[in-house]
Length: 263
Length: 304
Figure 1 (cartoon, helix red, strand yellow):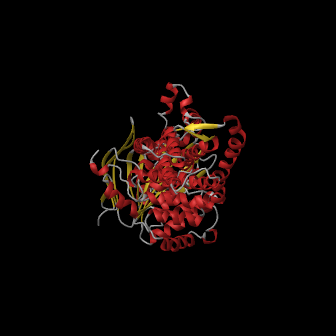
Figure 2 (tube, rainbow over the protein chains, first blue to last red):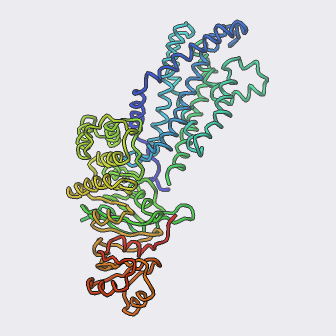
Figure 3 (tube, one colour):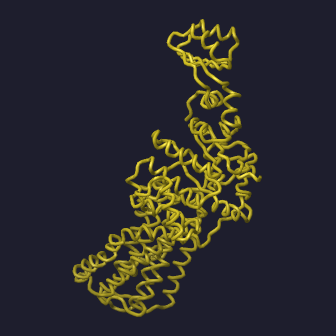
């Protein structure tokens, strides 16, 4: 391959972002609902129901209430879901059923720009949903400020990481039903075992090591470090992990997509 | 004048399967050029390389003077062509007008100009009162017209149409043809694939018939008919042995299809009268068409 035939990514990916934003605005009232209502349901279930059983939990040698403990985790899970599901089901439908990418490729856009636009859009959806959820959770005084504002750029990075791996799966699954596999083997275990609903140090050592391989574990640690404090070097390492995760899966998704679509 | 498309020994390979096997042709500015062939002949593979969807496996390809294997030059080409793909891949999440506007944005056309251009095109395809309709509510024929309008949003120098009327009813097909004739009259260069011979005869200035990735013939529709099928054809249903020996005796150009015999003829009336004596289930004298040429060259066997 000579240099002139290498993939090109210009700011044209913003056109795809725009297209997705345009369709999103058509249904924003419906899209706003889950991030507004979900935290209320979770906080009600865990705050009123579970916390009586659980009592306080320890976080970085501090004792905090269970609701304070899980609020950042709810935000993290929300970031993961919005990034991941946009570039799996959302992108797959556009690519496979609607042939939207095919039509776009007959314009000045190159495939890499289309996929970049989709992934950045996934990250943006994470930002939108997280901002809404953050506002709701903040009403209950579960987030410290001004540090809490940092959760918005963090939701972009997290969205980028999960949208990238989502797009990777979209590039490799044969049909839409096969998304059940990464969801069952990757997303659901993360939802349960990433220090979301119980502190990781209650797990045996090997399980803790395993959990630290998962991106959601790092994301939950960052959001807790921001929302509860302290934001220390450990949190920086978590951020670096997420950045590296994106730096691996973003180009990988581009390569795999080219392999799938360019024939 | 520099050709709009110049393909030299163009090849496309999918694994061990050769879809396009070294074809060469050129399209002149302002002409309507057809690529004809049965299913799987390599038509779509060829034009996908032309609009930059598929990389070349071999050969050289210049579109609007640019080398499409160079991504910088390909980008320039992509700005100046309009493509009507085989599927109606309109954006179902958007309305009719939005489909055109969003597409315009991919060509960096500013919003206000895009809206004006979109309205103009909706008028051209006689759908200006459906601009807010959602795509899902449209029939196949209407969708096709919008796909055509969408391909024109950037005022392309080259319009590429991949089987533009496949699956349409006769009314819709004629609607599309009229629009394409209008565009041709305006001097826009058109590259078209089809397996409808009527479409090719009506629209194309020149065409190639391809099969198994190779060009079988190239020429003007009428010349190809004259050369390969003659002027007229006598079609005999259920020919008997006497007719067959008559044909053999007179050494007439013919195709024996078993239940049907085609006799290619120059001097029509005289021969027709003679053949009529052998007609049991009916004889038809008709003008030779491109379809006769096509079937003669690509065979009558079914394709996958």
